[in-house]
Amino acid sequence: MAEFLLAAAGFVLAMVALGLVRILRGPAIADRIMAAQLLGTGGIATLLLIAPATGMAATTDVALSLALLAAFASVAFVQGTSGPDDPEATEGR
Amino acid sequence: MSLALDILSVLAISAGAFFFLAGTVGLLRFPDALTRLHALTKADNLGLGLVVLGLLPRADGALGALKLIVVWLLVLVAGATVSQLIARVAQRAGPAP
Image (tube, rainbow over all chains, first blue to last red; front, side, top):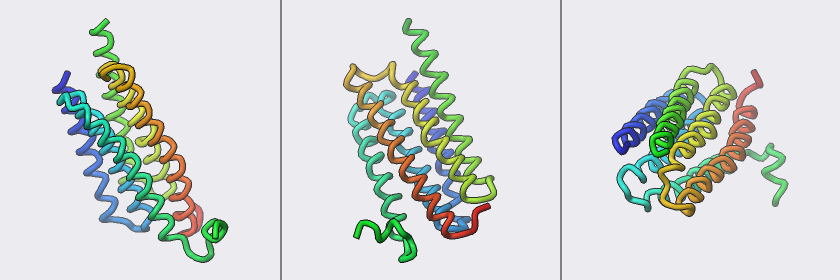
């Protein structure tokens, strides 16, 4: 079973790495952050799969913090790109 | 019983990995930003959800299983929020298809 879990982790990681081609090709900045978001989710899935395969339970905690950080990264991106014409950007000020 | 749980794990994790494959292919092949976002959210929510479902029988104790579910719920909430925000940025950048 551990071999299957590790193989699944490797497969998910390979898929996510392939998705990073979208960062190179673009064209819009939104497409690039989408690939980064897929990297975050795929990384979480990989860490969750590795945890029972290797018996290191702390890996699940790493996945938990990655879930938190991936969300913050995307929100920071949107905050950085929202211009003065964005009604919701000025609402809270 | 143990064999049945193993089969459930293998099936659910394989299905989850398939959704990651579909998400990547969609991200690379779909023509515009909003359809790519559609493909991405499937990988986010269903792919990770099925992986977590497959890992639940192997979690150590109720607390470990709860932690797995919390990771998934956090990703669900974050994914729902972030996909709305990304869609808004994509729509402002170009005309709606």
